[in-house]
Amino acid sequence: MKRLLIILLIFPFFLFAQNQETPHWRPTKHFSPPKNWTNDPNGLIFFQGEYHLFYQHNPYENQWGHMSWGHAVSKDLLSWENLPVAIPEDSVWIFSGTVVADVQNTSGFSTQSEGCLVAIYTADYHGKKENQHLAYSNDRGRTWTKFVGNPVLDLNKKDFRDPHIFWHKSSQHWIMSTVLPLEYKVVFFGSKNLKNWDKIGEFGQQGDMRKIWECPSLIELPVDGNYQNTKWLLMISSNGVTDGFTGMQYFVGDFDGKNFTNNNPPETKLYVDFGKDYYAGIPFNNPPENQKLMLGWLASWQYAGEIPTFPWKGTMSIPREISFKTFPEGIRLIQQPIEALKHKNENRIFEKDNFVLSEEKELTGNSLFSKNSYLIEVEFELKSAKKFGFKIGQKKDKTDKKKVLQETVIGYDTKTKELYIDRTKSGKIIKDSFGSVEKVNLALQDKKLKLQILVDKSSVEVFGNDGKVALTDLFFPEAGTNQFSIFTEKGKVNVKHLKIWDL
Ligand code: FRU
Image (tube, rainbow, N blue to C red):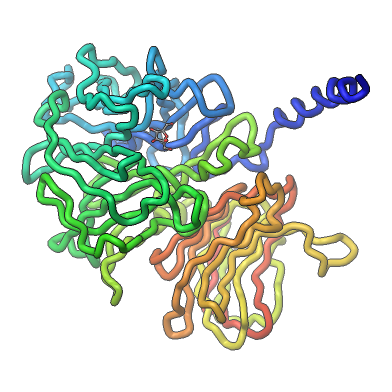
């Protein structure tokens, strides 16, 4: 009886704590919905001067459910205008998919000379079955009509989802990549009109098969900046680099209009991001000339439901420019945060070159960079330090400044040759497995390390050596916890170049 009374007394406080707004974790330059849940980005496309971001959305609650497509538009990929729900659930959930610009009106849905937008998504019958549906819009994505002939592709399977479609110029076909998640397979289909699809090939049973395969995408990219020499990037969301955690892997290969051939041995495992919080990334369709962009969801399915933000849950990554570069070990994916970030708030820049650092130095001050939202570009040259880097979202004891109460460390360990994010003391640890150190091997080049670090309230995206590796993690510092320092441990490091944009 006494226990029941205690529970009854505590319960309202529990609810209150759950529903407290968390503006200090709301990103400034990353998209997050004004309220309620989001997971995967869907239907990324540039059309008539606007970038569209559709997203897996629960319009009613701050948790997964009632899956529908939310919608936001942007002119610069940094400030997003959220629009009404584009494709709402009906008797089925609207799972992930693509939007294409049907400028030649192959589908016959267009009433405009400039063509229409067609969404191809998975209809999920509340876990019982999945097949592929169409919806179209003749008003720049503002309103959508579901096709009366749905489904357009049905294999009578429980798991068959996440269509990604693009126009393949040389074969004059629409190409769709979908997954059979439990079979670790991508299945390719071709179509002339988006309504009738024929199976043309499949690929799978290789790479990382520790978790089911989701959200495939296929895109042609230049190698070493040469548009005459291209390869195909096949990305899949599955297990990330850390055992038991979702993430993204990729394959580099050739695509002949029907089949994808992996250029690496089947056991080769390549990862898109070495942090724990990058998933379901897909490229933008129909981009302005030569722009190759992708964007992902910043979370891991291991704890996405427990993310402590309110009244929204879920954030997208910064759009990343993607390309291929040749290294001794082979052709690898390069990712860089979009350049446009640097053209925001030009006047709020901190710059300092060629200084030797022998201890930790706090950089917060002059009201600059005190909002946990900044882009850092730095080049370090190793002297004698064992470790060096940055500490963000720091809070130190008021009387004993040496005592660190909270911090997230982005560092380089010269002994193990690893770039890392350490969020074990980063603030709210939402689960045991959240308080972890994420690392990736990265050799210094002539003793030098280049980093781009994008911090935006509750996420950090790190790009090492011109985008050769990416590491992405969420972190949840207490409100007002936003000191930041540059550090070295047990020796010196030369900071050749440091530039910070306050966002
Ligand atoms: C990936 C995913 C997709 C699915 C969607 C449902 O995160 O599981 O496979 O379409 O989310 O919300």
